[in-house]
View 1 (tube, one colour):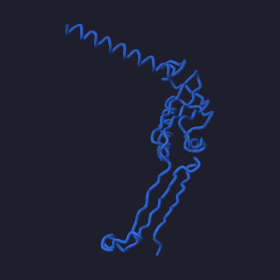
View 2 (spheres, rainbow, N blue to C red):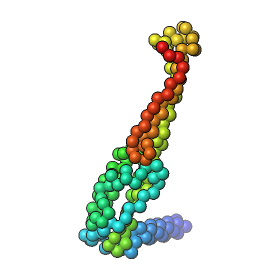
View 3 (tube, rainbow, N blue to C red):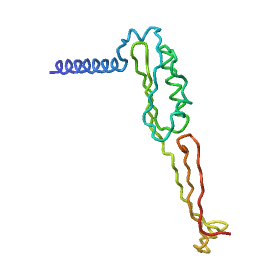
Length: 173
């Protein structure tokens, strides 16, 4: 029984390996791994952006380390992919960035998928006008309270600009 379980386990591992190998081949299109391992050059045809609801494409294009029409080797494609991913994450506009190259003959394209961060931050304000909190507790005068909100948008109009405003009501000196 133990031998049959071991054999079944090995067979299952082989099937999983073949399945993952087939998936990796589909990601590379018509080319084979042998074609990608040599110093073959690929031409960048297009860049597909996905997941950007607010951020404008120009913000993406400013952070890219490559341009349309560039001719790159497989190694250069991977290097540019990592550098561009780091550039996009360093803008602090996105939680996650996934960049996937797809190949066909001697052409390729990038798919850049992002998950945008929250851009609107609203912080409530509640403060007393006394010199310190213990003076407020001793006095107990609730008419000397100020309240309001601090509002910030860190990607205003999708252009990576910051908009801030402060709104306060209540006691005035």
